[in-house]
Amino acid sequence: MLAGQIINGLMVGGLYALVAVGFTLIVGVLHRINFAHTEVFMVGGFAGLVIAQAVPSIPLAMAGAFVIGGIFGIIVERISFRNLDSEEASITAALSSMAVGLLMLDLVHHIWGSEPLSFPLVNALGSGSFEVFGVRFVPVQGLVLALTLVLVLVLYFVIEKTHTGRNIRAVSDNATAAALLGIPVKFVGQQVFFITSALAALTGLLFALRVGTVNSDIGMTFALKALAVTAIGGMGNLWGAVVGGLLVGLLEAMAVQFGFGPLADLIVWGFMIIVLLVRPQGLFGSVFHGAGARA
Image 1 (tube, rainbow, N blue to C red):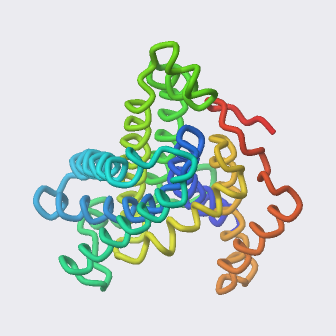
Image 2 (tube, rainbow, N blue to C red; image 1 turned 30 degrees about the vertical axis):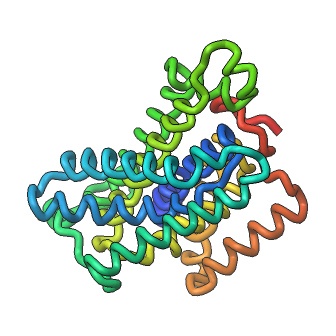
């Protein structure tokens, strides 16, 4: 059913967008790419799994994944970025974050192995279905779609309406001027890492709820595609990441709808190449200004 596939595409696209927003904020504020971001996404699923096995509560699992992801973000910032903040060290910082991500992946392999593990809270949501405007949902789909929308709106509020968001926008526009105005630039960078990593881990939990399993490979298969979403929308553009995520989700859903499911990944990466050939800065430009999209 076409309407069902569209809803599916928007749900998956929203998850892509939430991870891509993390790449975008770090690029916009620090002008760096954090390659460990994909593995923080993966860790969120396993953190939720551990909590769900101890206490079968979705809110507790979400809170735990959020906090643990934020802590991992601070660790990545401390190891890979805090002392490598010069322009000359940008490649070193990116490679260091990649090494930290691979270390996280190796630790997960040693603790949980490389085989997918079932996520216990999916069954707790029930196996029935409900209908909204003629589109049928199972409970986990409705939950993931609703939470994805809420998280995007909350992030918009934080960036646009809070003191923290104003500081982030100021540092993004001009870090030197922000420092002269008394804004603690390094602390703002740490806040960005905490927020983006916590959001990535929470998204990893939502993805685990959606598919019913946690898998150490999801960082390289799902979250890495969010980097392509970031490039499509425009490196450093927040709303570009959101729109790019939704576009990629819908593109995959339409590929499935019209019988090209096995080629979905190929279509997405091909679409990214075409976009970058026609518009190298991405669809919405590459300058991060708060939550606005500016070409």
